[in-house]
Length: 333
Image (cartoon, rainbow, N blue to C red; front, side, top):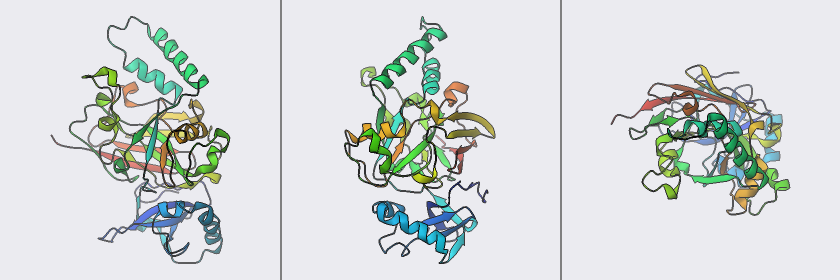
């Protein structure tokens, strides 16, 4: 089912969302229970008076999750037509963790795209060398994770403003895990039990700002390249983990102006969700509502030689999680 505005529903009995009434000038947001029939229930007061946001629900997820199933079965309460509601990012996290270089073919493509003009290696040699590096990382259990800003998140159907300073804006469709319990020093075999659910992220990147040319030894500059306001559309839905299925067999598809650019399976991940959570929690405490981006597959703009421009339409989908549709708006200098 597809709603007005391109909001494709999910393949699950229910999901969580953050919504507002489209005609409400105050734009007051509320946590909602959404079902595939295309209706939503305001959860404020339904699962306790503390349920003022999706994040507060996640803070007591072990208590709330069974209650949501009861609400769906009872179907009591004033359910609203989703077509008359605005969909926002499903959760407002305190922390955003981002995994880089986590899809095998994507890393190979970027390595080839960023090769210096005087690189003496053939493309085949460069491909083999970076593949060997990834094999070593996997064997030594070395994911690459950095920190993002919650202020970069925006809704799944909001316009994305591309700053005038952004020379090479690129798309990066990603599976996002949302944490449901505090997690610190979590072993791999227990890590998935800390995930409340999954959603869709498009983690835009200014490729021109990734590497510090003034001080190469410092390495990457993720603040400048990824954290402009609205550079990470998130959502539309937070689908509970139990309904998502095999995390190693989800299909990610991003279309640019109707043309498929990214079309890959999560089986190409170097580090799965459990290994990423274990890695992050070895250094930092993950909190309920935190978002973990798991990396982007092959098919970015650098690979195609086609970066984002004013007026571009991006449509992103992941198996069972719905879809988002965003329009790029170029900022004037």
